[in-house]
Length: 223
Image 1 (cartoon, helix red, strand yellow):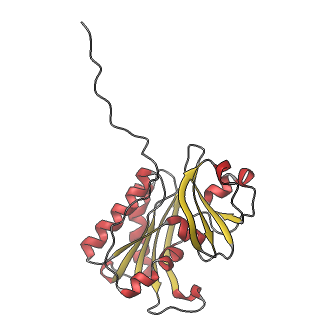
Image 2 (tube, one colour):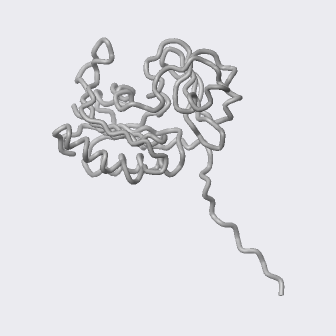
Image 3 (tube, rainbow, N blue to C red):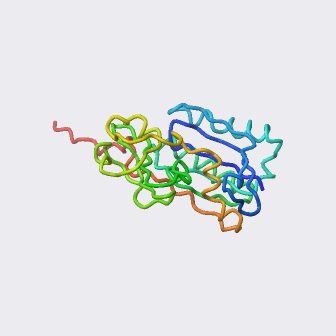
């Protein structure tokens, strides 16, 4: 079955068409085949690159939108505007096509099936990281947002763009990818896709309020 994978939780704007096997395969790497993928590294280009990336992936895979069985979208954590672009796109496409959409924590996709303890950290800007802690690929703490120094007490290796950016502070072995891969996103949702689970509300993990705020009431002017 063909699955569209989308992630806009970071500077990597990712779209891909992935083939998921109808049954689990051992090793798990055989479960998914990425037929076409586009990744644009542009922290402010989510709205510009996502839609063309989806169209290019469908064309390269020789598929039409109607061939898709499901859509998987990374739910963050991530910046407000970029994350919203991906989730709205996924939700609208799923509704129009009449197929289910499933959300995956983007940090879970970075962690993948990495053995042992692992800290996954994404760049949250403002000199902070979005982070979660894993053991043998299972999330045991987070996601949360904090300064890198607040995460140094966690043992094990690390992965993610935030880990690379603050490697001097976190000071642990760097393994795994900087951003969620399409194959990992689909693998995280594989059981739900195969079971034909109901479509999910794609709830973004912002973890903090957006930078933009509504203006306050105008100040009274004294005559």
